[in-house]
Length: 417
Image 1: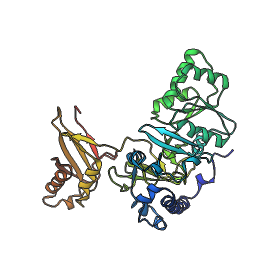
Image 2: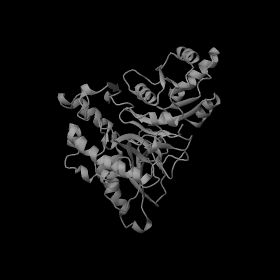
Image 3: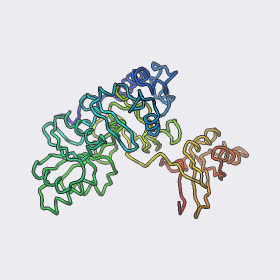
Image 4: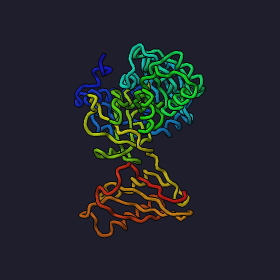
């Protein structure tokens, strides 16, 4: 049986880009026509002109906070999704509620969340029994993986979370081929199985998500004879990326377009830089365009060693929302970006907040080439800091490339926050 789910995974990268952006132009037109919120957000946008990444970068970024605001404050006719969906509520299969609350739709097409691709890369095949320990209560994670398993042709044990002894007994009795859920809960199940003397040897593969998979935990699970892979998915977007080779990055799903943006802006970062993961999905029912995940990552160079040709994410590298309270006032990454925008000589910059016992100090470290350091530049930048944040800050000019490549725009280095 093929190592790949379909031929899309190995197509020429340039062909993928062409086809995805042709589909994006149609998606923008569809979103404007069928989703009232996007008719407002994309007013004045010519869908036929959104044919490359430069055009995509000119569209507005949609944040999770905006989903909540639209769902809570929107007109009655747009509830519960705030006018962001492009299908009538009664034609959906399910409606989920994530913390916030944020209401998430689930459509009627098979593998609506597109998780079959991640399951296939993790080794699941038709006829396997899958022990699913993602939650089925209100949040969509359990159903996201179940529908993907059904697409492949697997049977599913809808185990959910908790009830560890019952989980162990079910695995020992049903003999599933693999597990899906968080990696930490798999470790708990394995520990409980050893304590109970249960035979869990049927488990040979696992697809995990929802939390970090450190190398120590991967090795511990592997010592139990289980080959584990991870995936990156959200309730808003479905599958974003998945692992095919351990520690070789996460391959992007074929039905998303991913950008890496400098936190606090809508601007793409340079090659190899860490930034916020922003995703455009080609799902016609829920056409999220430039949805900011709030997660930091970077794109890796080259193709995956498995032969899949889609770009790869490094993996989760932290949170992009670095809003920090300084002297009783919030400072946002967007404000740091505004300071940089006012001075063309600045490349990357980083606001470092330090101090103890409430004696806060701000220092903006800005990458500026020596040739561009005109007289009075640091003082002018300091004036911009005060104008934008209403707080005083010192300025240190550093050489290009001197700042860490970790996606941080604001670093809170205080001893006592």
